[in-house]
Image (cartoon, rainbow, N blue to C red; front, side):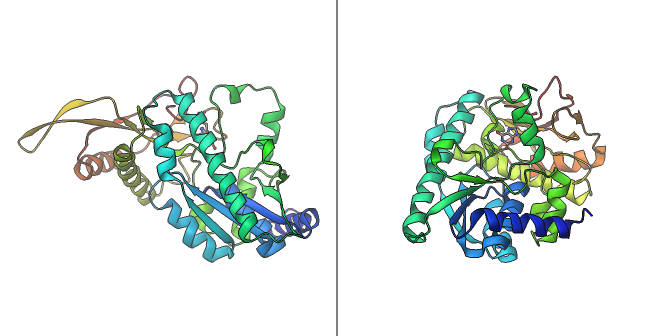
Length: 326
Ligand code: XMP
């Protein structure tokens, strides 16, 4: 019988057999897949597992704290947080091309992770039990997609923060390989992963870096983070979290338009709301979010984020538009 309890138990047992006495590493992005994978491995081999969360500065408000506090409290994992914000910002300085951004973010991520892996080996790895395994939150559709010839992966160089090259020389533990997303969520709940993480909507590995159209800077990230946090808060408040697949909030950093606020002229940036409904992200439609919810989001963003004087709604389906703007 398929029950979350049975499945969780089977997966835990399988990981325990696979890993034995060796040490294991897991990159935790804050997303549901890596979190549930880590929770399974934690249950299987306890403190043989060390999780690494790379804070690249491209996360949304509260995400690092969610991993650092809530996830650790709920699961008891051993966690290292790497503050790589400066490293990512300087690597991204002056870069505007989407694919270049993605490649840089992927490369810097690996760099930060490798450094952390070396530190773990030094600090926690005893000679007899070196770090041998790397946990990956690969799901069944990922397995099919990378084997199949859909070609969608070529449109953008997706990298899952967690998707690492082979020359890292770890063997992979992929406890979610047989599961679909909704099954991962059920297993996660069964293992006590916090609801906020279990129900988190998809968020791309390169994070806010590909939601700033133009160069990524600390100031622009701060503007986008505030706008995004307002949009998320209001969509949740309206009870739309599970109805909407995800809602990228995009800053058109190189565009300015004239506005008026109080007695004064403004010359600010537009924010784009991109709420979509989808089954699997391969295709999507724009979500018919109620007008009053959109109005509240728009009013709050323009009132509370002074650099933004215009909020626009993306009403493009996928195809032809992708979900993310870059
Ligand atoms: P697109 O923009 O291609 O996005 O329609 C489809 C889905 O994938 C997410 N996405 C990513 N996820 N690493 C990820 O882990 C990435 O580099 C990446 N790029 C896009 C996107 O948020 C959407 O859910």
